[in-house]
Length: 209
Image (cartoon, rainbow, N blue to C red):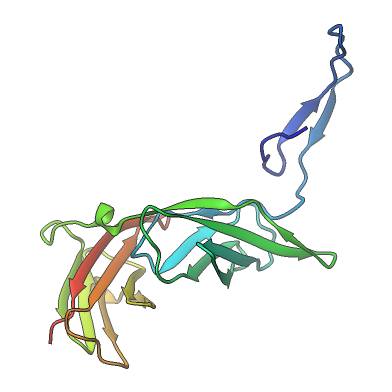
């Protein structure tokens, strides 16, 4: 008998009913973990350089994170609190990716049920220059600088197949230098997330010499 996936700790009642409708004694059971909990993954877009999320009720160990994008797989690790940030290049809008958590118990690898995550277009999170919190002050073929209004934490920057997690400094300022010069007209995506790590805003700017 198949039932929907249940969370660890869920209480269930099990009983049988015969052909004349007589009900057996009720057995109270509690769901135990047979694998890591299904990951919770935050809202993403095709401009997201990282897949952010966490594993609910994760024991204090690091888990392997496996992400399926089309026919390709990408791997990362969670911290001991179950939080993870995995780099994934070239996400396509309107596609769905799968995220798994993996651990090892008594020498046996255990894989969670997949979290299915929809990839939004970055345009869903794009705002006009006037209303945007992300202000790109300078963008050239060798460096970028700007600031995030009332910004704390990080700004995520994606350039072609490369991703950067840049810590915001005083007053939300940020700066990034490139080892290799970018071509004129290259698109650069800047993304910030909210307190729950969901994408809250994305800005796209092009390189100018």
